[in-house]
Image (cartoon, rainbow, N blue to C red; front, side, top):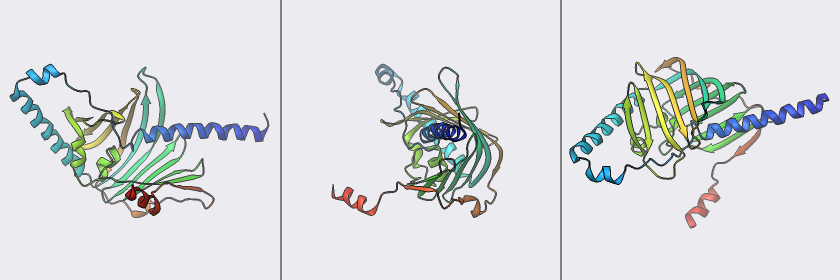
Length: 254
């Protein structure tokens, strides 16, 4: 195979892999929807003692308050991460690593360093995704108050987003189960170690578990604003997916 053909083949392969990474990203940390919660049996709901049900509701409210307190206590966060995606057969579908920075003022940087570079930057109401290998920058709107995702959970200053979940707790592990229809995820686990964010685990529609492990964690230490900037080459393709004013006018007319 000639040099030109080899480069073209490698480029096509990398684009396929990066596209798969983007798909995993969109159905992972930043997905805004969740799988419908499995309903309790009618018999259980009809015949369970009312006192027991009230106790369970009180426990859920308690867990929600505790989780909200832990999350809101994190003003800034810096850590390295490693991610693996495991299929229902136990096979590793994806493995990548990098670092995460966020500031509750509305800034979030997810930087993938291996196997390929990728940068996901949220700055208040805008999300930018830069793929150096694809020479492409994608810009879209981001609303933390309504973004029912891990990113939304840690960036919002409101705890109302937790109302979208039933919450269970065991051994420093909070399990969030969606309680609305039409959602993409079955389960989100948030695991703490000595009140420090340790592991995030997301189960999707296809029984694939995305597990994010954090190391070298630093919380509530100042992060320079320059850390939340991207160095974009001039020849980068820019894809702006934010709603245009004209599009919003059309929606309002409808």
